[in-house]
Image 1 (spheres, rainbow, N blue to C red):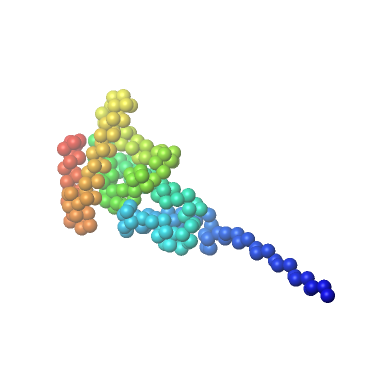
Image 2: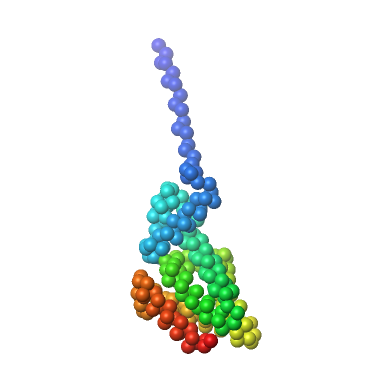
Length: 213
């Protein structure tokens, strides 16, 4: 007696990863960047995790890696935008003044104000170990922000382009160092309005001492 032939088993179909629901490619990238900036604003650079960024964007934990490679890739994009925003703030501050010394003074105030208003983003912009430090776009964005100082310094002190670049580095170092100290409450509490006013008053005195108007 012949045995009945068993029906052939169907091969299990291979699951193809579906795109994250509700997002187009560019929209998902933007949502992850916005989520990352919110985390940095609330918890600072140390409080950032890729998983939390994905959770806030409403996507799977693996989604950020698909678009940015890893946490460094995502944070690098955040840092690039930070430098672009900083350059815009410096440019805007200078545009409101006529005299080069006044422009430089305004840029110093704008730089520290940016740091105090966006501490998490500001700290991440300079956290090279957490970024793709050799990313060409990151380097370009950083140089563009520094160039805003160079433009004003060149008009103020004259000299060769190299001398202007050196003077701009001194100006940037001064306000950056002040901003870092201010974020550590060395000149008053960043979290209170009275402390903020005290910080900016102290900065005014420092800038007037360095570049008398």
